[in-house]
Image (tube, rainbow, N blue to C red; front, side, top):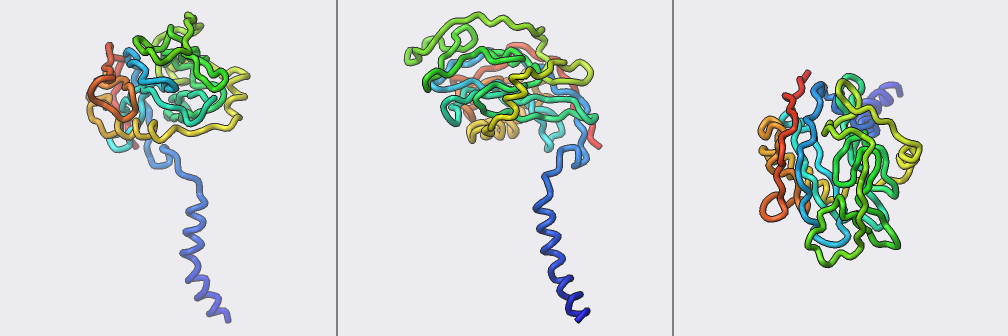
Amino acid sequence: MRSIRFVLSLLFAPVLFALVTLAMPSPSLAQFGVLISIPPPYLPVYEQPVIPGPGYLWTPGYWAWSPEYGEYYWVPGTWVLPPQVGVLWTPGYWEWGDNTFLWNPGYWGPQIGFYGGVNYGFGYTGDDYEGGYWNNGAFFYNRAVNNITNVTNITNIYNKTVITNVTVNNVSYHGGQGGLTAQPTAAQRAAARERHIPPTVEQTQQQHAASTNRALLASVNHGKPPIAATSKPGVFSGRGVVAAKEAAPYHRAARRL
């Protein structure tokens, strides 16, 4: 009887191991033996492309990390259609913690949450969003921070000068040496507890396309990406593609363990 139990335990051990493995949470970047010890480059200076049509919302560009190349690459800002009416985009941001730089991904939600105090521009002042608002199922655009020039089929427009209380220095990360020191407000902490919607398929495609374009690697463009923003996600050539106007301070790639 004991021999039968022993044989059965040998037969089912691989299955149990597989089930336990599947139940384990996904390992973090640091658990793979990679520490990103160099901060991302500063945000480049670029102009916003013209909005492609009504209903599109602006999602700012950002520096992402490439495990393949072991360095940062630029994901161009772009206009996207939100996943549903009434939601706003809270950008992701880099944060220093546990002796490495960690990425906090962006999300869609009814309120703007905390995004590290990063001044992404075009309404994203670092502590709020002044690019527009929803009203009765329609989005109203602030002409002062959105490029809706010569767009005749968008009538929900107002003009409000944006005054920010943060210093505009193009720093792209929170915490650590030289990083931003903003803290979330009570409203932003409440927004963090709300139901969130992940990036849309188009946003994911935008990041994937950027990750395969060597010209967007920081070591290649030295903080001045040739494709800083696009009118539509995934379209990296032709009209609607905007290059960076000024180079941002550039840091060499992080060390790898």
